[in-house]
Length: 338
Image (tube, rainbow, N blue to C red):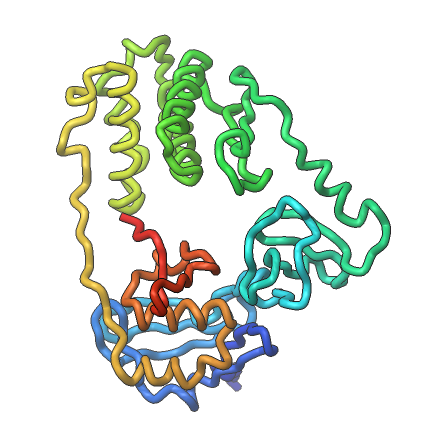
């Protein structure tokens, strides 16, 4: 007899504030959604019970695939609206208007942390070290340029101690020194912490090429080194290649090298931007009917975006106290990221 293939139910499980939301895609899906690439409703669902991605979808028309069981961050499904941050230096306002954004960490349920300031604590504990000891560990030492680890809290407010610039593995030493000076220049030029971290990653990769080619000084950087670097990243996405080459060209300009000779216009890949896929009326109505089952922060972001026509990244960067009253009218303030 042939081996019988076991059939699994195509059910995705999503963690919410109110427990788990289960969706049976075989039974509940009525072709409401279109493929985001080809706009065809020919979508099939597959169960993978032995993998991290338990349920996936595949478009029969264009073969595009995706996951239906993305992980929900712990600060969403373990969020505690009844707790406030004990750190007196934390002034951020949480999702429900309370001080801080508290969520449970660990499986035993005793330790909690604030998403904003990173302090860990045990609720209802009278012991003085219940959170003060964690706070003491975060004290900032004096900044030293020569050190190979820089704490971003020296340069940016509201940055946790988990964000550091690590120069240890950047070689050779003369190149590391120039990278440090350029990173310091970018920090003083008000570049964001995320941009600085990306710059350092790009320069680390380029440094590996310099080390391999035994380049001994700035003036020895030539076109051959650039081509080898571009060749090493050619399998990456076009937008990623563009960002790395552009960052490198800016670095060369700061070094007062002939950046136009080292990096040519043809080294930049052509970027294509797909038009936005608007939500159809059926999808919008389905979302509104299920809003009560969606985590509160995500549901509120969706409602604000719906009424303001703002982009998702603008909504995500919006403060919780963004609603202001002027002359009896409600004003919503946010910064549009360009």
